[in-house]
Image (cartoon, rainbow, N blue to C red; front, side):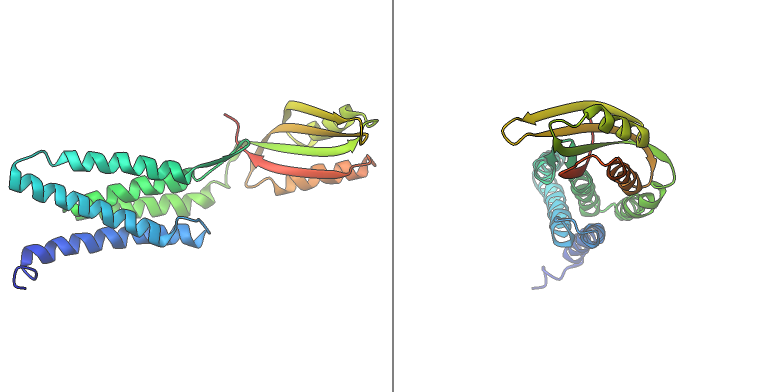
Length: 230
């Protein structure tokens, strides 16, 4: 019992608690914004990384081995974990920020586990600022985005009119995909749009849909999908 409550063990436990706490802070931010990998996931990643780092240092001191060997495996393992958080749906890619959070939380846990508390705390602060403050800064400048507009209309509708309306309200039409169903006498027109905008594209989508409705084109359905072009 005395060995368990020695100053050395208490110091190591303090490192673990700090690694878990700092990781949980970042995980809480992800949880608040509705991400699947939230507080508990990030806490476990940070705690595990901290423990691996402590063990690598203890083993290295006991057996005179390279302490970086276990640490290197943490980075490899986080790569697999991050890959599982990334999902691709058409042009849209989700989970990149969460995967980056896994990576940074692992680094914070390693720093805390190695005893570099100031580095771990400062990195946590910078990560939180990038996740929260920069979210609002992102709305202050114009950027290029890609959206997919899918419209279902009868076969006799002139597709050029639809393309012209989309061009008028957005920057440009990159791709046009037309699929005709002669049995149902319907065609599906899929337009990939490049848009320069500030903030989100909700107003642009409403404007395009409004213009299409004013044109009196017999539209059966419209879908507006967010995406990213590579």
